[in-house]
Image (tube, rainbow, N blue to C red):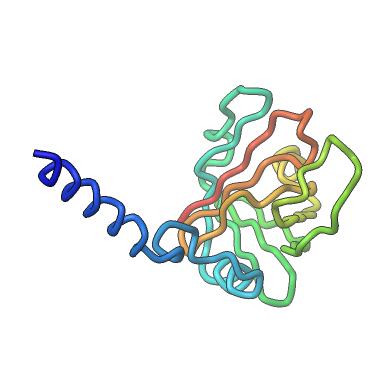
Length: 149
């Protein structure tokens, strides 16, 4: 009877050990790869939360292009806004209001009230070919911004 119990347990252990790290982690951990993914195609805001209030619908009809030269263009049917963006690693900080395990994603777009909301330093929690998840770099703030394709 003990042999029957050990066999499934051994199989589970072998499966867990044989899974490679790349299968369980985000494939886009390399900063160059992330920058390339961000600068490919147009992005839409899929979520914007400010202090827990969902303001995503305010961004309806806007598309964002993050260009390889560090410029950003936000287009709607009525206006176009330009600015700059960057995605870079950040150095360690002794400031408890920041979280230095994420890359820093900075957006600076001149324009209206909506552009002011996205223009800041963000922490890049997730960057893939189809999603960008950002949160305010001040952990005391409760703002999140997500882009999708």
